[in-house]
Image (cartoon, rainbow, N blue to C red; front, side):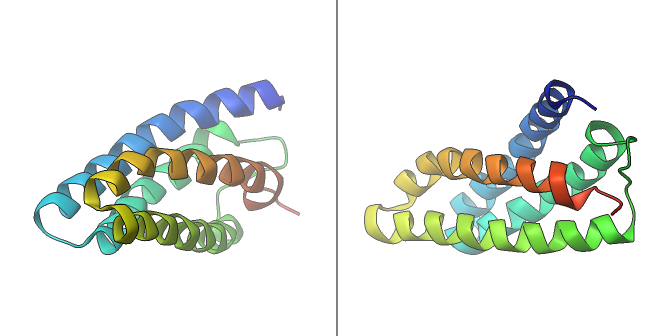
Length: 128
């Protein structure tokens, strides 16, 4: 599969995934939870959707599959990216407040998405 197709699919899935993630984080951090656990809850929501859609659509075929191996690899990648993302959002919250953390979260999400694309394309969904 071409890089162009993978990027396009990953971007489309990523926008939907991010909308779910960000909405959950905003709602929970505004009314129920501190920003760090709200961010993790949002990332879990988005991750479940993103893993399935990227495995079934974006990276399907061409020596790639959605299965246990991909799920294990995805989990390792997701945990690492979630720790980095949450630490960044939490640091901003501690230093500049909730509004700044909520505003800067999309920047941290874009950085996470870039790393996630490279790892998904070359490691997570590969059969070998």
